[in-house]
Each structure stands twice: as structure tokens, then as C-alpha cells.
Length: 309
Image (cartoon, rainbow, N blue to C red; front, top):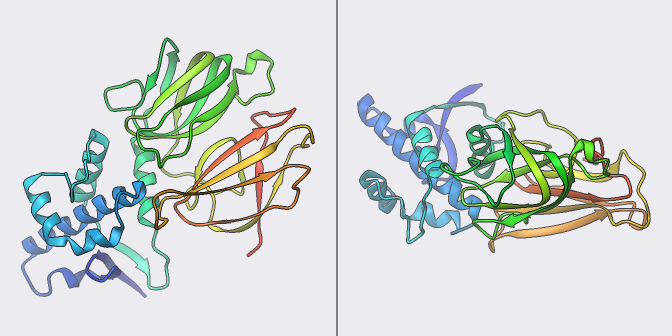
């Protein structure tokens, strides 16, 4: 049986839409829904960055209501800025929707909702000549989003600084297809407001926006991927479609959990001839940062996740 459900922050549950208003007039119903959605929006972003425990946000409902009404986005002493964040709040408030879900369905995590929105914000940049730092922001070289970064010229390193230290490290090696190198020419990257990228010995790049909706896959390439968006949560055994050279470190995977109790939680694993049997447990909303160091490292190389449950 389907029901129209909305999120009730007082209980932390999805409940029938009538909980908002009972028999009150429609105008109040819409207003209350917008307040609910606005608070959830703020909770999502703060949960992603682990600024505060999300339960604190629910306990400060009245404070949030007054802050939202006045347009002040400086919540509980936390500085929040940037056009992407403001547009995220606006889009979630303005596009009020009641979710139709099966009673037994598992709701998409709040962190995953934010990453899907981030993907929808991305805008393709066909060509950037590297003459300095590439900045991420609404008025900079690339807007925040999820991208396939394609190297068009040169062969070298991609490093940089994150605006928030909780985000995955930026440390990649890549090469254009015509450089006759074993390094990949395409790297998946999740870019946030205020991030800065440095390219060494790379002359040209493009940023190809990744769609808000992507197909789930058990085979991932080099770069950053979101559990629940790119791959299903679950227990996996790692494998690969290429021969691994024992002289090289092989595949490395860092798993970032933004819903951990103490800020960012990171755990790491490697797949190589010295460690051929590796299992990982992936939870929805985690970011996977996958890299490969091998004598053959091409765009066709894949880290394979064989499900065990």
C-alpha cells in the first residue's frame, strides 16, 4: 500500500502528510511543509560536513524556524555561505513534494540527497588552459559538482586544497591519451565550493558534468564515487580486470564516512599481489576514493566489487 509521506523532524520518521496540519487550512499546510523542508535541507548539508550532530538540529527547531524566516543562514554559530548552498535551500523549499514510498522502502539517506543535488549543479567546461590554480565556485573556473576530469594535454599530477578538511584528499596522477603514458586520462572528482586544484605538467583539461542520475555498477574506475549513487551498499570482495604487477602498490581505496560520530571517518584497503583477498563493507552515503599504481594503469582498468550478501 502506498502512502504520501513526508519527513517529521520531531520523530525522525517518515509519516503521513496529515501530521503537519490535521484539519487546518491548505495555506498553513504548505507553509509548514516548507519549514520542514528548509530545516531538513540545512540538516543535510551540515550532516555532510559533520559540523554538528544532526540530533542537535532537531532539538533547535524553534531557533531554526526564526532563523529561516529572517533569512539568516548562520545556524547555531556555524558559518554557512555560497550560492550553491543557498540555491540548495531555495530549491528544496520551493519545490515542495510529498514522497510516495512503499511502507517497507528504505529512504535515501540525507547525505546521499545532498550528493545528488551537487551532481545536478555541475556544468560542463569543455576546455581550460592551465595557467594557474583552478578554483571551484559560482564565479570561478568550475562550479561545484561531480565531474569526469579529462586531461587534454600533458602528463603529471593533480593536487589541491579542499575548502573543508573532511573532504577526500586531492592527489592524482593523469595523462592525456596522446602522451603515450600508462596513467588514466579521466578521473572522477567531487568538487565543493572553495576547492582549489593545482595541475603540474598538465596543460589542458575539461570538466565533464556527471548526471544527477547514474547507473549503479559493481565496477568502478579511478576517482571518487558515492555509495548508494554509483554502487549499492553492501559487503564486497575486491577483484580487478587487469594484471597487477607485484612491484607496484596496486589498487588503493579510501572510504570516507561523513555520518561518523567524530567528524570524518576514513578507512583504507589495498588490492595487490601481496594482498589478493580483500573485503569491504560499504554504507550508503560514503565516498570511495579509488586510485591505481601499476605498470599498466589505463582508463579501462576497473576495481571490481563482488557482492557477498
